[in-house]
Length: 429
Image 1: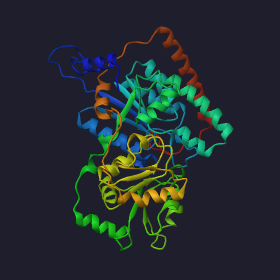
Image 2 (image 1 turned 60 degrees about the vertical axis):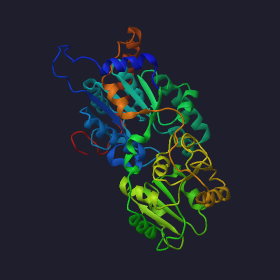
Image 3 (image 1 turned 90 degrees about the vertical axis):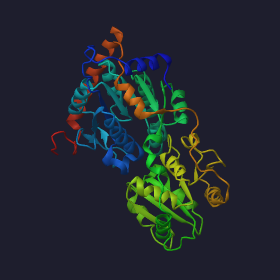
Image 4 (image 1 turned 90 degrees about the horizontal axis):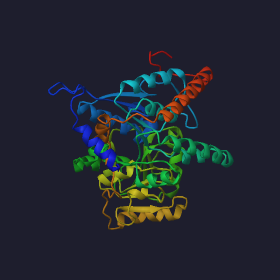
C-alpha cells in the first residue's frame, strides 16, 4: 500500500533515536490528532465510522501513543446539519479553525476521515509539515444523488470532485476502505495510497457463545417460533440504506429482524409485530450482543448501493452467517457470489426474495474472503506519528498560506450566519 520511499521513511522513523538525539535519553511520547465528525457517541448516525475511531484511539493508547480527538460529538467542535438531520458536520467557523489549528500544531501526525473541513485540514497539515492521512469511508456523492436534483447534483459533484481531488495531493496518505472504492476514487483523479483492513475492530465477532443463549435469542426474535427462517439487517436506519427494499423482498414465512437506530426509527417501529413477522430492535446494541444476533439468524441482508466496504458483511461472515447483499460497490470486495454469500438486485423484489430463500440451502462457506492486500490501521497510525516529512517547495508554501487566508475569511463570514448548537469547547450552548 505504501510506495518504496515512504516505506523506507517509516522504517527509519520506527528505529529513530530519541528526540533529543542523545543516547539513553527518554523518548518523547508521540501524539496523534484525530479530527472526525463521527465518534463514540455517534453510533446511530456514524455507524462503522464511529466504531473505527473509537477502537483506533483505544488501541493506540494501549501502545502508549497520546491521542487527541476533535469531534462534533465530544464537545470539541461546533457543527451544522445538512440533508441528514442527525449528522453533525464540522462547522466552517473561525473558532473551529482556531481549535483545529492549535491541535494540528501540537500533534506529531493527523488523521481525518471525510468531513466538511477536509480541504482546510489538507492545507493546514501541508503548511505545518505534519504527516497526515485522509481516510475516506463514505461515498457522500452517492448519498447526495438520492436527495438532490440531477442537474444541481452534477454541478455540485463536479466542483466537489475537482476540489477534493486536488487537495488529496496535500495529504501524505489518502486511504479508503476497500479495493472497489479505491479504484473508483482513482478514476476520479484522486491520489489514493491504498485501503485499510477493517478487521482490527471486529475481534469481538470471533468469540464463542453458549448454544443455549443463541437458541433463546432466536426464539425471542421469531416471536416464539424458532423453526422460522430469519433474515437480519443491522446498521443505521437511514433512507440511503434502502431498508424498505429488504422489507419488500422478505419471504412470506420468514422473520425480518432490524437492528439499529436513525431517523427512520419511528417508521420502522410501526412494522414491528408477529403479524408482519418483523422484529425491530431500535438501538445500536453492543458488539457482544450483535454477535449473537448474527448467529441467531440464517442470513444477513443489505440493499444499500453506496457502501464503500460494508462492515456488517464482514461481521456476519466472522459469525458464520452467509449474506445476501446488493450487487454494488463495496460488497464486491468481500462477497464471492455462490461461495460465502450471494449478490442480488433488491430493486427486483422477486429476484432478491429467491436469493434469500435459496441461501440457507446452498453449500456456502461463510467466512471473510478479502480481495487484494490491505493495511492494518492501528499499525499505520503508529508508523505515521513517527514519520517526518521535508519542507514543501517555497512557492507551494506561499500558495497554501494564501489559501489559508481565503479559508479564514470564509470561516469568519460563515460564522456570522452559522447557528451554533451544542459542542462548544467551554461546554456552553
